[in-house]
Amino acid sequence: MPYAVLLVSEAENNIVDIFDYMVFPNNMPAQQLICINRHGQVLWVAKNPSVPNTSACTNFTRSTNNVLSNSSQ
Image (cartoon, rainbow, N blue to C red; front, side, top):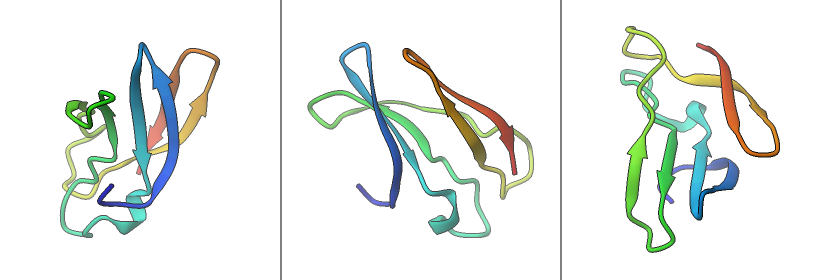
């Protein structure tokens, strides 16, 4: 993985990774929420929550079947 991982969760036989947004470059969006399959192929990358080029998802909440983000920075 290219960045420090905050949370790894299984979802429908795939893996959802949440990377630490603090280690991303300051001048670009932190695309830190991704889903990969068990072969390491990226299935999707979550869109940034807002327009500024420094936005990131923060304050993740984890339930039994979901990973949710309730705010952005």
